[in-house]
Image 1: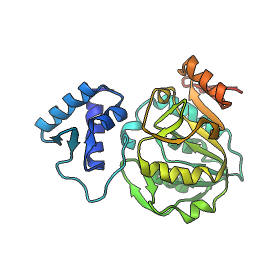
Image 2 (image 1 turned 180 degrees about the vertical axis):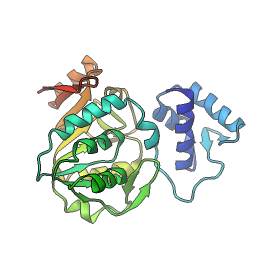
Image 3 (image 1 turned 90 degrees about the horizontal axis):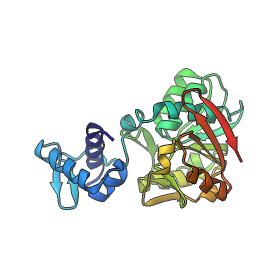
Image 4 (image 1 turned 30 degrees about the vertical axis):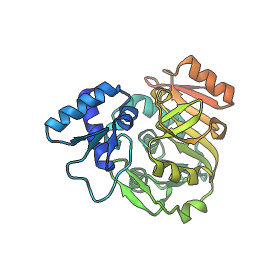
Amino acid sequence: MHETERHRVILAAVQARPLATVAELVDITGTSEATIRRDIAALHVEGRLRRVRGGAEAINPPEQGGLMGRPFSVNETINIAQKRAIARAAADLCKDGEPIIINGGTTTYQMVHYLTGRRLSVFTNSFGIAEFLIHNSRNSVVIPGGTIYREQNVILSPFGGVVASHFYAKRMFIGCQGLGAHGLMEADPMVVQSELALINQAEELIVLADSSKFSGRSSLILCGLDRIHSVITDNGIRDEDRAMLEKAGVMLTVVEAAEQKSQSVA
Protein backbone atom coordinates (compact mmCIF):
# COMPACT_ATOMS: atom_id res chain seq x y z
CA MET A 1 0.00 0.00 0.00
CA HIS A 2 1.35 3.41 -1.00
CA GLU A 3 2.14 5.89 1.78
CA THR A 4 -0.62 8.33 0.74
CA GLU A 5 -3.16 5.52 0.77
CA ARG A 6 -1.93 4.29 4.17
CA HIS A 7 -2.33 7.77 5.60
CA ARG A 8 -5.94 7.95 4.33
CA VAL A 9 -6.71 4.60 5.95
CA ILE A 10 -5.06 5.58 9.25
CA LEU A 11 -6.90 8.90 9.40
CA ALA A 12 -10.22 7.15 8.68
CA ALA A 13 -9.49 4.62 11.42
CA VAL A 14 -8.76 7.24 14.09
CA GLN A 15 -12.03 8.97 13.22
CA ALA A 16 -13.84 5.65 13.76
CA ARG A 17 -12.60 4.87 17.28
CA PRO A 18 -11.67 6.71 20.48
CA LEU A 19 -8.28 5.06 20.02
CA ALA A 20 -6.91 3.25 16.98
CA THR A 21 -4.17 0.93 18.21
CA VAL A 22 -0.99 0.14 16.33
CA ALA A 23 -2.04 -3.52 16.11
CA GLU A 24 -5.41 -2.59 14.55
CA LEU A 25 -3.72 -0.33 12.02
CA VAL A 26 -1.26 -3.09 11.11
CA ASP A 27 -4.21 -5.43 10.41
CA ILE A 28 -6.08 -2.88 8.33
CA THR A 29 -3.15 -1.76 6.19
CA GLY A 30 -1.25 -5.03 5.96
CA THR A 31 2.02 -3.28 6.77
CA SER A 32 4.57 -3.62 9.56
CA GLU A 33 4.37 -2.16 13.05
CA ALA A 34 7.46 -0.05 12.37
CA THR A 35 5.84 1.46 9.27
CA ILE A 36 2.65 2.29 11.17
CA ARG A 37 4.58 3.96 13.97
CA ARG A 38 6.46 6.10 11.42
CA ASP A 39 3.17 7.04 9.73
CA ILE A 40 1.58 7.99 13.06
CA ALA A 41 4.62 10.12 13.94
CA ALA A 42 4.49 11.90 10.57
CA LEU A 43 0.75 12.57 10.79
CA HIS A 44 1.17 13.78 14.38
CA VAL A 45 3.80 16.31 13.29
CA GLU A 46 1.46 17.47 10.49
CA GLY A 47 -1.29 17.99 13.07
CA ARG A 48 -3.67 15.53 11.39
CA LEU A 49 -3.96 13.19 14.40
CA ARG A 50 -2.70 12.90 17.96
CA ARG A 51 -0.09 10.28 18.78
CA VAL A 52 -0.79 8.48 22.06
CA ARG A 53 0.68 5.49 23.83
CA GLY A 54 -0.08 2.37 21.80
CA GLY A 55 -1.70 4.13 18.86
CA ALA A 56 -3.38 7.33 17.73
CA GLU A 57 -6.56 9.33 18.20
CA ALA A 58 -8.42 11.97 16.22
CA ILE A 59 -7.84 15.67 16.82
CA ASN A 60 -11.59 16.33 16.49
CA PRO A 61 -13.48 13.03 16.81
CA PRO A 62 -16.97 12.98 15.22
CA GLU A 63 -20.12 12.65 17.32
CA GLN A 64 -21.03 9.43 15.48
CA GLY A 65 -18.49 6.64 15.76
CA GLY A 66 -17.34 4.84 12.66
CA LEU A 67 -16.36 1.31 11.75
CA MET A 68 -12.93 -0.27 11.67
CA GLY A 69 -11.57 -1.13 8.24
CA ARG A 70 -10.58 0.74 5.13
CA PRO A 71 -13.01 3.38 3.86
CA PHE A 72 -15.13 2.42 0.83
CA SER A 73 -13.50 5.18 -1.21
CA VAL A 74 -10.07 3.61 -0.64
CA ASN A 75 -11.10 -0.01 -1.15
CA GLU A 76 -12.98 0.63 -4.39
CA THR A 77 -9.76 1.65 -6.15
CA ILE A 78 -7.87 -1.52 -5.17
CA ASN A 79 -7.85 -4.51 -7.60
CA ILE A 80 -10.78 -2.98 -9.49
CA ALA A 81 -10.41 -5.16 -12.62
CA GLN A 82 -10.47 -8.32 -10.49
CA LYS A 83 -13.48 -7.09 -8.54
CA ARG A 84 -15.46 -6.38 -11.71
CA ALA A 85 -14.72 -9.82 -13.14
CA ILE A 86 -15.68 -11.48 -9.84
CA ALA A 87 -18.89 -9.44 -9.64
CA ARG A 88 -19.87 -10.37 -13.18
CA ALA A 89 -19.47 -14.06 -12.41
CA ALA A 90 -21.59 -13.57 -9.28
CA ALA A 91 -24.34 -11.77 -11.20
CA ASP A 92 -24.42 -14.62 -13.72
CA LEU A 93 -25.65 -16.91 -10.91
CA CYS A 94 -28.79 -14.81 -10.37
CA LYS A 95 -32.07 -15.72 -12.04
CA ASP A 96 -35.06 -13.43 -12.50
CA GLY A 97 -37.60 -13.78 -9.72
CA GLU A 98 -35.09 -14.99 -7.14
CA PRO A 99 -34.66 -13.28 -3.76
CA ILE A 100 -31.00 -12.51 -3.01
CA ILE A 101 -28.97 -10.68 -0.39
CA ILE A 102 -26.04 -8.48 -1.41
CA ASN A 103 -23.94 -7.38 1.52
CA GLY A 104 -22.19 -4.03 1.46
CA GLY A 105 -18.65 -3.97 0.08
CA THR A 106 -16.61 -2.74 -2.86
CA THR A 107 -16.60 -6.08 -4.69
CA THR A 108 -20.29 -6.77 -4.13
CA TYR A 109 -21.04 -3.21 -5.23
CA GLN A 110 -19.67 -4.02 -8.69
CA MET A 111 -22.54 -6.51 -9.14
CA VAL A 112 -25.00 -3.65 -9.70
CA HIS A 113 -23.66 -2.97 -13.20
CA TYR A 114 -24.63 -6.50 -14.26
CA LEU A 115 -28.06 -6.51 -12.61
CA THR A 116 -29.62 -3.53 -14.39
CA GLY A 117 -31.62 -5.73 -16.77
CA ARG A 118 -32.77 -8.21 -14.13
CA ARG A 119 -35.94 -8.52 -12.06
CA LEU A 120 -34.81 -9.73 -8.66
CA SER A 121 -35.82 -9.12 -5.08
CA VAL A 122 -32.66 -7.66 -3.55
CA PHE A 123 -32.07 -7.16 0.16
CA THR A 124 -28.96 -5.07 0.82
CA ASN A 125 -27.43 -3.16 3.71
CA SER A 126 -25.44 -1.07 1.24
CA PHE A 127 -26.79 2.43 0.70
CA GLY A 128 -24.83 2.66 -2.56
CA ILE A 129 -26.13 -0.63 -3.96
CA ALA A 130 -29.72 0.25 -3.07
CA GLU A 131 -29.46 3.72 -4.60
CA PHE A 132 -27.94 2.44 -7.86
CA LEU A 133 -30.51 -0.33 -8.34
CA ILE A 134 -33.43 1.98 -7.54
CA HIS A 135 -32.34 4.47 -10.21
CA ASN A 136 -31.03 2.06 -12.84
CA SER A 137 -33.10 -1.12 -12.70
CA ARG A 138 -36.51 -2.62 -12.03
CA ASN A 139 -35.28 -4.89 -9.28
CA SER A 140 -37.25 -4.82 -6.04
CA VAL A 141 -34.98 -3.35 -3.34
CA VAL A 142 -35.29 -3.89 0.42
CA ILE A 143 -33.02 -2.19 2.97
CA PRO A 144 -32.76 -2.59 6.75
CA GLY A 145 -33.33 0.14 9.29
CA GLY A 146 -30.32 1.58 11.05
CA THR A 147 -27.52 4.11 10.84
CA ILE A 148 -25.70 4.93 7.62
CA TYR A 149 -21.94 4.68 8.09
CA ARG A 150 -20.60 6.94 5.37
CA GLU A 151 -17.00 5.71 5.34
CA GLN A 152 -18.04 2.10 4.60
CA ASN A 153 -21.28 3.03 2.78
CA VAL A 154 -23.39 0.57 4.79
CA ILE A 155 -26.53 0.64 6.94
CA LEU A 156 -26.16 -1.10 10.32
CA SER A 157 -28.26 -1.36 13.46
CA PRO A 158 -27.02 -2.45 16.90
CA PHE A 159 -30.53 -3.78 17.65
CA GLY A 160 -30.81 -6.32 14.85
CA GLY A 161 -33.32 -6.08 12.02
CA VAL A 162 -36.95 -7.14 11.89
CA VAL A 163 -36.99 -6.91 8.09
CA ALA A 164 -33.86 -9.04 7.74
CA SER A 165 -35.26 -11.76 9.99
CA HIS A 166 -38.23 -12.22 7.64
CA PHE A 167 -36.36 -12.05 4.32
CA TYR A 168 -35.55 -15.40 2.72
CA ALA A 169 -32.83 -15.53 0.06
CA LYS A 170 -31.67 -18.20 -2.30
CA ARG A 171 -28.17 -16.75 -2.18
CA MET A 172 -26.26 -14.20 -0.18
CA PHE A 173 -23.29 -12.50 -1.81
CA ILE A 174 -20.70 -11.21 0.65
CA GLY A 175 -17.21 -9.74 0.67
CA CYS A 176 -14.72 -9.98 3.53
CA GLN A 177 -11.69 -8.57 5.27
CA GLY A 178 -9.86 -11.87 4.97
CA LEU A 179 -10.39 -15.53 4.16
CA GLY A 180 -8.36 -18.33 5.72
CA ALA A 181 -8.44 -21.78 7.25
CA HIS A 182 -10.49 -20.51 10.20
CA GLY A 183 -13.10 -19.00 7.93
CA LEU A 184 -14.45 -15.62 6.86
CA MET A 185 -12.99 -12.63 8.70
CA GLU A 186 -14.25 -9.07 9.24
CA ALA A 187 -12.73 -5.97 10.83
CA ASP A 188 -15.52 -4.60 13.02
CA PRO A 189 -17.71 -6.29 15.69
CA MET A 190 -20.81 -4.40 14.55
CA VAL A 191 -20.33 -5.60 10.97
CA VAL A 192 -20.01 -9.17 12.23
CA GLN A 193 -23.20 -8.83 14.29
CA SER A 194 -25.13 -7.53 11.28
CA GLU A 195 -23.79 -10.15 8.88
CA LEU A 196 -24.47 -13.04 11.27
CA ALA A 197 -28.15 -12.15 11.16
CA LEU A 198 -28.14 -12.02 7.36
CA ILE A 199 -26.25 -15.23 6.56
CA ASN A 200 -28.83 -17.26 8.44
CA GLN A 201 -31.49 -16.03 6.01
CA ALA A 202 -29.83 -17.46 2.89
CA GLU A 203 -29.56 -21.01 1.57
CA GLU A 204 -26.18 -20.42 -0.05
CA LEU A 205 -23.40 -18.10 1.14
CA ILE A 206 -21.25 -16.99 -1.78
CA VAL A 207 -18.04 -15.13 -0.99
CA LEU A 208 -16.68 -12.57 -3.46
CA ALA A 209 -13.00 -12.16 -2.64
CA ASP A 210 -10.11 -11.12 -4.86
CA SER A 211 -6.98 -13.20 -4.32
CA SER A 212 -5.39 -10.64 -1.99
CA LYS A 213 -8.08 -11.42 0.63
CA PHE A 214 -6.49 -14.83 1.26
CA SER A 215 -3.60 -12.93 2.84
CA GLY A 216 -5.90 -10.62 4.81
CA ARG A 217 -6.32 -11.26 8.52
CA SER A 218 -8.50 -10.05 11.38
CA SER A 219 -9.19 -11.16 14.93
CA LEU A 220 -12.93 -11.41 14.17
CA ILE A 221 -14.25 -14.55 12.50
CA LEU A 222 -17.71 -14.27 10.96
CA CYS A 223 -18.17 -17.96 10.10
CA GLY A 224 -16.23 -21.11 9.35
CA LEU A 225 -15.51 -22.48 5.90
CA ASP A 226 -18.21 -25.10 6.47
CA ARG A 227 -20.89 -22.37 6.18
CA ILE A 228 -19.58 -21.14 2.81
CA HIS A 229 -21.14 -22.67 -0.30
CA SER A 230 -18.74 -21.18 -2.84
CA VAL A 231 -16.00 -18.61 -3.38
CA ILE A 232 -15.47 -16.49 -6.48
CA THR A 233 -11.95 -15.13 -6.86
CA ASP A 234 -9.39 -14.18 -9.51
CA ASN A 235 -6.58 -16.21 -11.05
CA GLY A 236 -4.03 -14.77 -8.62
CA ILE A 237 -5.17 -17.34 -6.04
CA ARG A 238 -2.33 -19.47 -4.66
CA ASP A 239 -2.26 -23.25 -4.90
CA GLU A 240 -2.36 -23.61 -1.12
CA ASP A 241 -5.53 -21.51 -0.95
CA ARG A 242 -7.16 -23.65 -3.64
CA ALA A 243 -6.25 -26.73 -1.64
CA MET A 244 -7.65 -25.21 1.55
CA LEU A 245 -11.04 -24.59 -0.06
CA GLU A 246 -11.10 -27.99 -1.76
CA LYS A 247 -10.39 -29.73 1.56
CA ALA A 248 -13.25 -27.81 3.17
CA GLY A 249 -15.65 -28.79 0.38
CA VAL A 250 -16.11 -25.19 -0.81
CA MET A 251 -16.85 -24.72 -4.50
CA LEU A 252 -14.41 -22.41 -6.25
CA THR A 253 -14.90 -20.21 -9.32
CA VAL A 254 -11.77 -18.54 -10.69
CA VAL A 255 -12.10 -15.58 -13.05
CA GLU A 256 -9.57 -13.87 -15.28
CA ALA A 257 -9.77 -10.14 -14.79
CA ALA A 258 -8.55 -9.14 -18.24
CA GLU A 259 -10.91 -11.29 -20.26
CA GLN A 260 -13.55 -11.83 -17.57
CA LYS A 261 -13.64 -15.55 -18.21
CA SER A 262 -14.25 -18.08 -15.48
CA GLN A 263 -13.89 -21.73 -14.61
CA SER A 264 -15.58 -23.67 -11.85
CA VAL A 265 -13.84 -26.20 -9.63
CA ALA A 266 -15.82 -28.55 -7.41
